[in-house]
Length: 246
Ligand SMILES: [Fe+2]
Ligand SMILES: [Fe+2]
Image (cartoon, helix red, strand yellow):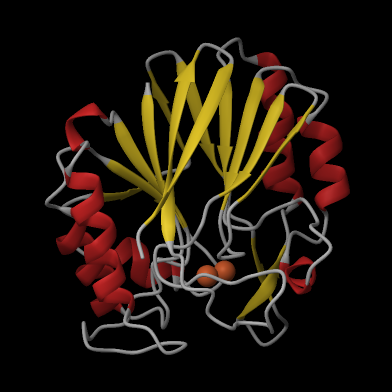
C-alpha cells in the first residue's frame, strides 16, 4: 500500500495570499504537479492538519477543489491553525474528516491533538485528551497493524520547534511503544521532515507543503524546501520517501 502524507498547507481564502513571504496556494500547486507523475500508484492520501492558515471556509474550499484533481481519497485531521467547525462544514468533494478508516487490513486512527486555551482559541502546543489517549490504548485489543495520525509531533529534536510539540508526549510514547500493533505515528506542525524509529514504531513528521523551517535558522524563517512524504506499508513494515517541491 502506498500512502501520500501531506501536511500544513496553510491556505487562505485567496489564492494570492502571502504568509511568511511565500504563496501557500502556489506551493500546493507545485506539490500537486509533483504528485501527478505517480498519482496512479497511490492508494490514498492523508493531511495531518493546518490545512488552513486562517480557519476560513474559503480556505477549506480552496484545498478541497485543488486536491479534487487527484484520483484517490484524502482523509484529514485538524491542526492548531484549523477551525474544526469550518473544516467539517464545507461541501466536501475530496477531503474526508473521519476518526478512523481501515484499508487493506491496516487501521488508520486519526487523533485530535489541538489544545484549547481558556479563551476558546487553539493553542500552538498540542495535547491529547484522556478520551483520545483511551482510543490509542484500545488498539491493543485489535489485530490489524495500526497507523496513528495527528497534527502535533511527539519527539524532541533539540531545536526551537520543541516548544511547539505535544505536551503529554511522554504518556503517549509510553502507550504507543507498549502496543506492537502500532507501526507508525505520522504528524506535521513542525514544517520540517523528522523521522525516528523507537522499538518497532516509526515516528515520522512530514515536511510542510507550504513553508519549511529549519533547526538552525531563526523561528519561522523560511528554509525554502517544502514538500511531502510518500509511505509504503507492507504488513508491519513502513518505509518512507520525502519529496522536496521547491
Ligand atoms: Fe503549520
Ligand atoms: Fe501547526
